[in-house]
Image (tube, rainbow, N blue to C red):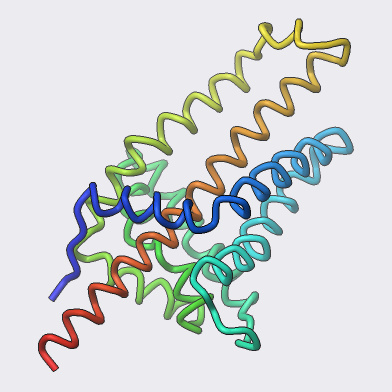
Amino acid sequence: MPVQCSFGDLWAEIGRVFGENRALTLLLLAVIGAGYTGLDLLSEHFSSVSGLIVSVFVQYAFLEKVLDVPAGEKRRFGSMLGMMLMSGIGIIVGLVLLIVPGLFLAARWIAAPAYVVAGGKRSRESLSASWEATRGCWLTVMLAYLVYLVPVAFALALLALLGMPFLSGMGPADPALWQSVFLNLWAAGIVVFNWLIVAAVYRLVEEQGHTVESVFA
């Protein structure tokens, strides 16, 4: 029986995950934004590498803390990397194909990182586990993306394309620096918020799944 979760359930769980880990979330937001900005100042070639490090290692540590993974559990960084690459290729191809297929895949695979970290699954196993777990709530997750992540990401891309002359009066530093800080903090916010969705969806589907199992056991 597919686990169901309403739009309200998802946002309430996102709020609980954030509330329980507010200090860590805000710290990561600041550190990731500052790190991206510093790497921008060094070289644009570091951006893809830094993004990969954040997606694999920093997300892994965040999910370990948020999902209360016991200390000493084997860390599957290779599985996380493989899962990110496989899902990333599929989602990018889907986004190219009229956007909606990409959002659908993103929604169905949303919990895959959590299944690697908390479920101890390998790359393909985590994608399959997430696909199965979100059968009854993928539309809710897709709506969350449409309501928040897609508009914010679009605005970020538009600002980066057009530039932000209003930042030129913020201080004596180069306006390009302020623009970099602003854009990178915004980008970091998208990344960290997506991790909150990952954790929230995983907690919802696993909690309800265990409830259903206990009822029918």
